[in-house]
Length: 148
Image 1 (tube, rainbow, N blue to C red):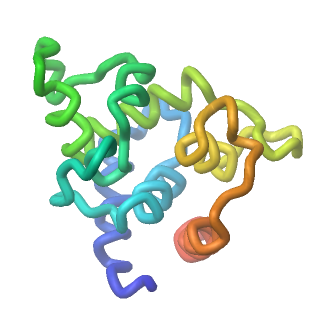
Image 2 (image 1 turned 90 degrees about the vertical axis):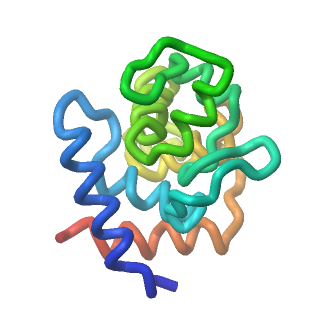
């Protein structure tokens, strides 16, 4: 399952370097959300209504404030260009969670599990059930990287 651990580690370190200030989601959490979304595949492109390593929809990107790659002006291809870039996509996830982050699990704390649920199920449905394979992969990723 984690044959690509070095890739995940590199992604987490890279995202840490980009998002060290004013971050809502920790670099480990962001890396694990990326990992369970697509295996953090940065060459995946668009498939159906989702694009990029975080599997982001146009609506999600729009709700995140329509960030653009290198802060370029918004254009017809701004969505695909941003969400297919790991740094811009991570910024979109950060923006989305800053806007919609809340306690989904009812434990009184907003944490990485809440962010995963919001990312996967949406802000208004995040208390729903996650696919067990998806959730287990996420928990294993967190256990592997959280204390490093």
